[in-house]
Length: 256
Image 1 (spheres, one colour):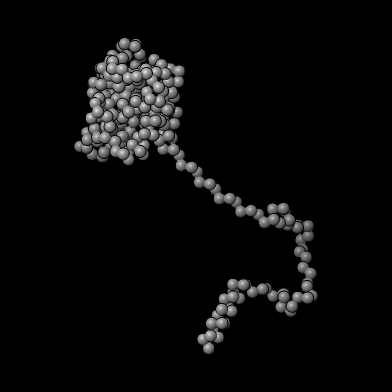
Image 2 (tube, rainbow, N blue to C red):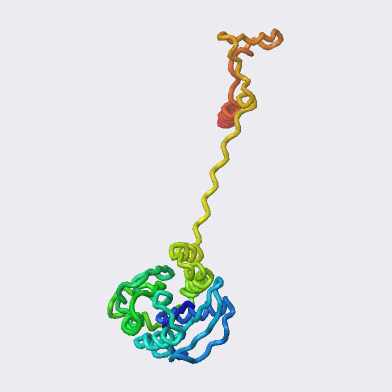
């Protein structure tokens, strides 16, 4: 059995916060794969289901973020799930909005939910870091994290990211982290279509058919048309030049 943990804070007042993107991803996974109903257990809410042939338990701790490890620890002990089979979904300030990275073990990076899980359960779990962007000023971090996603964020990348994480979760369950990240990235920011190359100009009929005659080094002179006027050998005047000359002559006569 795998345990997928979405991190967030309980209560309707926090539901739309950037800090609750882990809860949002957990909800989308349960919805997409038609898990059983949410049940209050292990100091949180749990739902059971199947993803790609593997039994999966999804947990949303309700201990508030900085005590998330208490809830996760209870689930691991009850089901005897190894820490290596735990996947934690959480917000990440140090990634641009809509970007995603998967990391196993390592530090908590100041995230209180991860800090608590590390302390209660160990560090050898996979973290799915869901970028929410940094406000640019340390003093604004608290308000940014506990602020709601804007309509623009929801429409431009949030919904696509949540759907992508859920859709590609079977790859992550199987351990293909690279493909998981790549597929989700393409769903959030699909590659731009390549511009079509301009069509090559068609060759003249004679050239296309190899009509050049290389049999004789000396070109034949065309037969002279005896009925042509005396000036027929001279080059014909350009139509545009002739028209322009006529127009100028006419204008000159009018001025006289």
